[in-house]
Every structure is written in C-alpha cells, then in structure tokens.
Image (cartoon, rainbow, N blue to C red; front, side):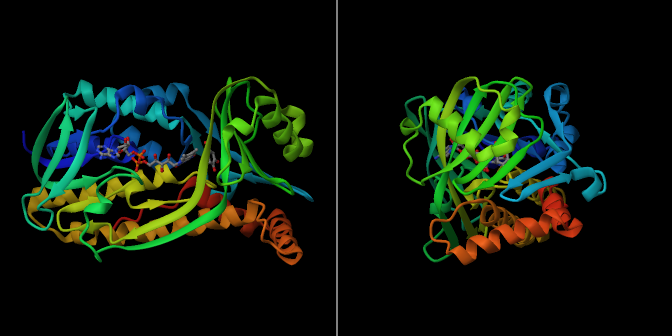
Length: 391
Ligand code: FAD
Ligand code: DHB
C-alpha cells in the first residue's frame, strides 16, 4: 500500500481531512490507534461553530446533524451581581452555534468514510515516521499483530495532544508555548432534560457550565482541582454543588441518572511551526485551548480546511505556495482563539491565588460586559466562530 497523504489519527482533524481530500480526488489512508467503538464513544465537545457545520454540509455529511442537532441562539453568564444574556444573532449579524456531540460527528464521518471505501484502519498504531525532510516520507505502524510501512507523499499529523507526530520534529525545530491552569473541569452526562439556555457561571466556589447533548441529555461541568479524583464526587455531591453555583438559575435544574463522569485539564498549548518538511500537524497535535468557549474541535476543522486546500493546489498545479503558508495561516487563527479561550477562562473561574483586589476586578469585568453591547458582542462573535482565515 502507498498513498498521497498518510493521515495519522481518526479524531475530528483526521476524519474531516480525509473527506476534504477525497472530495478533491486526493488519495489518503487514515491510521487510528484505537478501536472504532472507542473513538465513537469518547465524550468530548458539543458546540459546533457555523463554519464547522458548513464544512459538514459542503461534504454532504449533515443529514443526521440536520435532523438531530439543536440550534443555540443565546449564551447566559451568571455572576454575583447579575446575569449577562447574550442574544447571539442580534450581536453577530445573524449567527448562532449548533449543539451536536463530537462523538456523533465522528460516527457520521467514520460511517461515510467506510461507505466510500476508506481506507480507514482501526487499531493501527503509528510507531515512527521517517523521511519527513525528503519527498518520500514513510509511516511505520502496527496493525493486526504485524508491523507495516506506508510510503506517502505527505503526512498529516492529526494524532491529538498525546500523539507521536509532534515528537517526530527534529530537536529544536519546534517552539512550544504552554500555560497550565491550576484547576480542571469535572464533566458529567446526565439523563435529564437540560436547562433552556447554555449557561456559564462565575461563583465564589468556582466555575460551572450547563450545556446539553439532546432534549433528554444534559452535559454539565463544575470547576474542581486539577488533580481531582472523580470518585470523590458521588452523584449527590455533584448535584448539590451545581445547585449552589447556579443560584437562582437552579430553579430549572432537573437531576437524572449520571451516565459518564470525568475530569478534563484546563490548559493552553501551542507548537510552532505546524509543519516540518512533508509533515503537517493539525488540531490538538499542534494546539490545545482551555475548554471555556468550546473551541478545540472547531479549531481542528479550521486547520484541516486550510491544509486540504493547500494540498489540493499542490497536487493540481505543483504550486507549494499555500503549503508554505499553512502554518502561518493557521497560527493566526489559533492565537486569536487562545486569546479568547484564555479571556473566558480568566473571567469565569475561581483562582485561589487571586487577591481580594483581583476578585473585585473580575466582578467589575462581568458587570462591564453585562452593561456593554460591545463587551457582549466581543464574546458573542468569538463564541459563534471567527471567519476562516483564507489567504
Ligand atoms: P483527537 O480528537 O484527540 O484525535 C486524535 C486521534 O489520534 C485519536 O483518535 C487518537 O486515538 C489517535 N492517535 C493518537 N496517537 C496515535 C498513533 N500513534 N497512531 C494512530 N493514531 C493515534 N472542542 C470544541 O470545539 N467544542 C467543545 O464544546 C469542546 N468541549 C470539550 C469538552 C471536553 C471535556 C474536552 C476534553 C474537549 C473539548 N473540546 C471541545 C476539544 C475537542 O474535543 C478537541 O479539540 C478535539 O477532539 C481535537 O480533535 P483532533 O482530531 O485534533 O484530536
Ligand atoms: C461544552 C460547551 C461549552 O460552551 C464549552 O465552553 C465547553 C464545553 C460542551 O457542551 O461540552
């Protein structure tokens, strides 16, 4: 087997890229370390920007999404002295976000890829890359108990934060930027109808978030210690704490059977440049944003959109111009998104190290946004998604 583009990882970045390349008539192979059941069951993101939905639509992959998604036109932020209610279409010239679970996106993209003939290999773990400085790189992977080599023209490293591709850059070729926040999010999925509005909470006990996955399934988070053991949070403790943090907003809260519970770290990480030779990084392999603002998956889609276009131009015309600009084009958007996610994280969380002065500033910022159309519009236009940076 040989291919034009070897894609490592079948998360959103790798799967979207495989569809975009297939549509452009470019041959690719996707290698995924985990099983299909595992990647389809992984509970993660749920908020899709309009640009992400448009990519699914353009690929003809939006049939189930259109039937089952929920459109969100508002974002509420509760804080000590009040409520910020953001009307997204009014503040952004008609835009909204779409609620549809990441694992549903993954299921739709996997099914369509396999129906289109793949190749998409599960339980195919990439062990090493070589030749990324030349014109014929090779991916070495293990599948069904044997080791294989996949010669390619390009490699797309879509293997997430813990993958092998970033490590394949030669020493000194990457600069990394990292900020680890001193807390995490305890997230649950609950079999209970969600509260009406997507709600972020800044409370003296810490951040909370009420989101949803369907009319009958809520996705709820509370800020906890970075190293928190979910076992310390029996169901009743979670509901009691969420109720306290929601304050007046708790009136609407309905509890239910908890289906899943886990702790997510809150961190920012950027690796630059996102390309070395014939290896291109995309999605979480190159950058992580704090979850506040729901940007990670959307950023992965924005990267592979740029990459697919650049590879398309190269294979059509031989012009490497867009490939050469890939990293700069993506990083402009990445840093704007890091800025926004950091702003939202700082605005909404309890920082143990904050002085009384800093706590007052945080409340003043919330009160300012509550009373300012411009302050609200800044949050809203980032939340619905910045325009794609097309060059
Ligand atoms: P991944 O989804 O991590 O996929 C990488 C894939 O590569 C994996 O399947 C992995 O198994 C595979 N892989 C790794 N190593 C190898 C190897 N050696 N060989 C082969 N395969 C390999 N983002 C949003 O936009 N909106 C949200 O609402 C949101 N909420 C979130 C909530 C939580 C709790 C979490 C944890 C994240 C959230 N995110 C959100 C972030 C989002 O989930 C990620 O940014 C997204 O999954 C990135 O996609 P990816 O394809 O780059 O990486
Ligand atoms: C989710 C929603 C958000 O608005 C966010 O910032 C992070 C995660 C979610 O639905 O999982």
